[in-house]
Length: 293
Length: 320
Ligand code: SF4
Ligand code: SF4
Ligand code: FES
Image 1 (cartoon, each protein chain N blue to C red):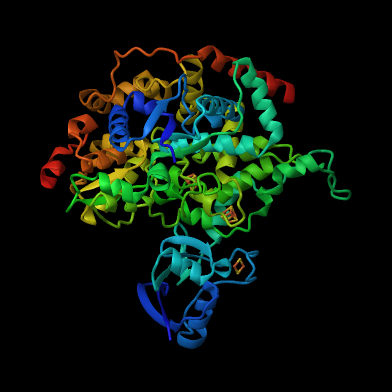
Image 2: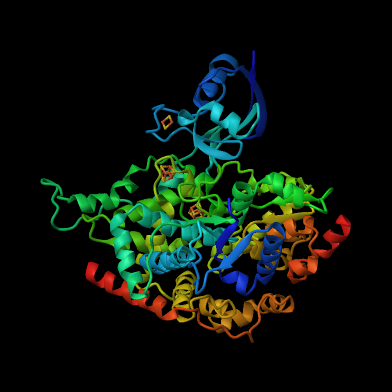
């Protein structure tokens, strides 16, 4: 398989989660994966835009996919659960409905574009398992994460709904554990492993999501984990940036660092933590790195 | 002979305990079979419910190793393989009052459902004597929603209900609201949509558990999205959820990408943001996560993006 992909970063990688951009690029380079950023990509709508206007949601994501098709790549890769879901949802709808496809293309024509349906939409986590392979990844590990206890927080949108995502069974997925173990880390089972981070309702359901963040941090901590790791920048932001808020008024210490998946991989590949943007986190990751060293 | 170890969370009306059972494994059996075996051979006090044994009555849902399923439709082997184990843990559904063992109370849920007026408010064209005429297209709109068997799996798996005080409507109640709101024979959409809106419609976390686990494959999150859209069209546009959704729609039109610095202000308004989000914003700025001074350029091809918006509006007009 040639390791050349169209790359859809998504808005957070350009702003609040720049460290995910840094770590993704570093890891891709180290593994020999070529990521070509789509020229002119727009926000996927982050699972909100369809509440306002469903057809526009489909149109802008058809345009995003068409940008990838123009590159002639087989796959468009993302590093965000929700971007993956939004793009795949649009793709599934259009591919299954010829009439809709025509309607979408009438619109795209005005922008001088066309949706063909030739490119798949995938996530870096899946690329590593499906295209790259665990064995190859293991060979690239220079600093095995021996002794590090990792709690994998999947996030909902990389698993569900299964008729759109479909990579693995959402009732008991294993992909994150496979990667962490290939890097030499120990994986920790915890109650909230498959929980929702609540990010998509953090404004209208502030109180409830705050409560959820507490549980989501406490659960891995009590299971003995050194850190949470997630394949989604929105989960990361919710668990990391909102953690001090969730701690407020609570006697019990909920502090736990939250890594992006490419950061965990980058550490095992021996990449300088600074280049992975580790210092950009709200909850300090340095103590965990010291324990590792 | 291979043994099957099953732990059941028991409840006798006062106290709760875990009880272990062991039965002989048989290939190709359902979870319901294991419950029946335990009750018939080992413990006649065990309470669980099931009626149709064919995925129709919706009475048999329980949690197995944390995931809610219809026991009459679930092969034991699929659960053993999925969790790579020889021990299964059976519990009653979450977010329901437990009566005994695995049996839960539905009356409080039916009371709660009344909030959305879960009945037809008929248009004048319909009469008791002659009934209603409904075309195939209009029937299609409600066809899937009417498949609900009230099994409660969506409720049990709902992440919002896990942290909510009980106001948030169960997903199957949103389904009922939707089902009547879009029914061509119903004349009062608002009477179904508005109570949904009032009962925390915008607090759905979009976690997708309901839609992913519904045995009837009802598009519950799609329905919630449609209810939100209807509520906005009915004038409920000033709340945080609606403003948030609109911010994504507008930012994509303006620059193609999201303006994260402005998002809280667009959603909460300037005053509320200033009052509640300052410590958060400072933290974000300190780590460089948000930079209010960063200038955002429109993406390449922004003109084309705006063409798409115009086109969507034209299509909507021509179709309505
Ligand atoms: S998507 Fe919304 S309604 Fe459905 S389970 Fe999640 S929070 Fe509950
Ligand atoms: S919507 Fe689906 S999961 Fe929920 S009660 Fe109805 S049939 Fe069961
Ligand atoms: S017994 Fe009726 S649905 Fe399972």
